[in-house]
Image (cartoon, rainbow, N blue to C red; front, side):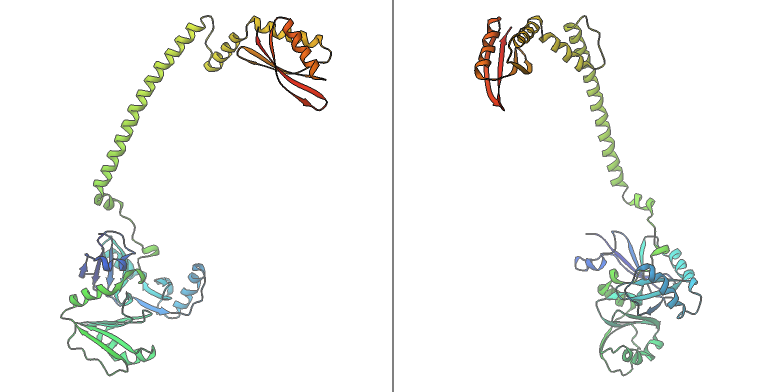
Length: 377
């Protein structure tokens, strides 16, 4: 099973709790992570969140509209802030460029997700978490706030009323905390320490649907040297396999080259033996085919062609259509006015000393077209 790591950091960027043994039942909550990568959950109030009523539009239009709307909410200049828009919740998170660069420089380069703790998506819809001197509240996964405990508690009744919250889960490691009387059902759970609380908190969070601030220009780049060091065994194994493959290919190529040269020498020797008076040309195959074809048509075959031609010339009603040669015989097609004239031509050729057989014949328009086989010369 792949190991996924999640670490909680305080506002001084010190790790206060880490979990890296995720069970299979929790694996789906970390689908956005790759093996060995780390998610940082930061407890810091440097992040601000805003909910704007934005229409469905392109990212290009959002890049124009959101800075304008943020400019009316932020105290400083919009160019001094880095913002992230979350498609699922339609929330905009903002932090100063100077601050997020400081965070990035302070944290481990293996961290691929930076999520403010107040903005972590959880399986509990309305949650108030009190960590000794700090507290954060998440309502319907659409409104987040991290502040000192007193500020959260003093405004709790107003906050719940504003968002029509009927039930609230409260987790606390601060035993001195006292909640005001509010018109909501409270599910209260106390923990002995921050670490115990964060351990159980890690069981319900979902990093996949949370707002990640390590995006755009602050996205962590791949450390290829570190990646190579982690997987150098597999890298060397792969390189060794490729080396063996190429060495085998070179040996096979050399063997085939030697075999090809031996075969070439044998062919040339055979050619010289069969055609001693011929000069070798570049296209050996065409040259050999031409010499073989020349050897097949001897004087007697040429004499047979002469006889066929004379017979056609002496027959007034015979027209030669085609003539072809197949090893030891000629096949000709002639055209006459009748079957009798076709037979007369066959008899004439036979009388001239050739062995002739009448083959298939057919009527073509007003003529008879027949095939004649001349079998011996």
